[in-house]
Image 1 (tube, rainbow, N blue to C red):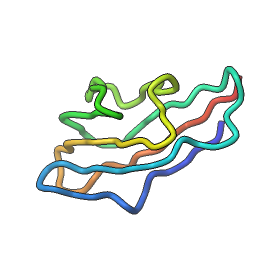
Image 2 (cartoon, rainbow, N blue to C red):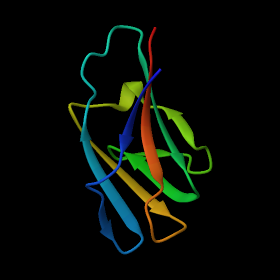
Image 3 (cartoon, rainbow, N blue to C red):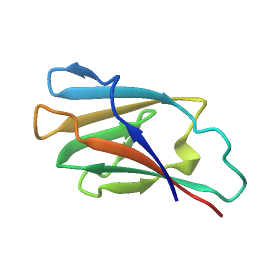
Length: 89
């Protein structure tokens, strides 16, 4: 498994944290991309599609675009630790 941490570059507007990122390169047919976070989240969206916030890991392979936007409303003032987990086929 390959992990990409989405660290810096968060835009915080009140309780909304937004992180833009590009689709990971080198994905091969059958690879799965999971979006995971640590910490409590009240609302989560990837490219306008809602993700169940209480589940901290989601298969987002089919939701990824060339340019992506992740929006989170966290229960704390600091954005949670977020990562992409790439699982090879």
